[in-house]
Image (cartoon, rainbow, N blue to C red; front, side, top):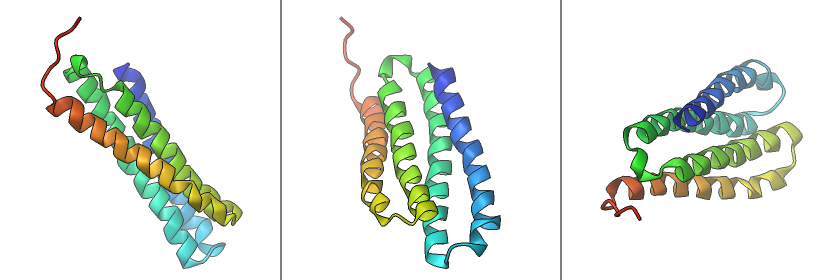
Length: 127
């Protein structure tokens, strides 16, 4: 599973670079500074969490007994919803996509919290 999580993080990061370039070169002339900042926030969070998933993949290999895969799924889903809703808001002009963004943020918070909890909680006996 660590390979899949690592690959997901790498894909998010690669797409983040591409979307960042798109925003810097193509969107700059199409949308105003406020919407460009929204798009850049989506790219920034996507990059952070793409790299975060790479770190989670390493942790899955390092501590396989810690059940970190659900956290990886939360980070992946949270990134898609958080950043994706910001991209859609900017590209379509439909402001209601902004109402979806916090759902992604909650998933990101839950994912990082799950990682902390799994790594700090005393080890449970396997049954």
